[in-house]
Image (cartoon, rainbow, N blue to C red; front, top):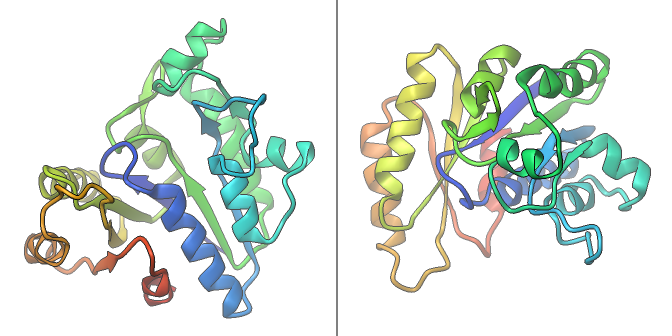
Length: 220
């Protein structure tokens, strides 16, 4: 079993899109796959959930969106589109690192799939609980990482900073996926990818156009 953490250099860089592409590429190779996104914010049960992050991950797994599948995929769900501890607080919940580990560790221990992806929320240094950032969860789980960055203005700095933090803390980085920004004012995509690759050392950097998921097979 191979377990990988999907981390973001920033919020809204396309972590779930990248994770979904990897899951589909793995299935196309005949591998068994599983996914876990322990905490989700901005989740509104009253709207169609098949376009939510858990819904997209389940679709990539080839599974229907059911209450049981949703609970197994993302048991910690909060409605406010804020950082997890802030969103939880609005619902009277004090979210801690222990709560996240109580979700993740049993899944890791019981998982038999060829590939298990664990997706974080926000960026590497975003608060994930009252007492933890996304980095703290990664360190506690000790999983190798795929870092997802973006090609928006400032994306090079955010991505390289996140990469440096991960490496400085001893976490293995399997690759950096640079997702193409949909913003028409974003910097040139190939030049952005090249700039990140120039300073990424021996970590593979993959260009990920939003309309092309063929990059995913290179990480498997």
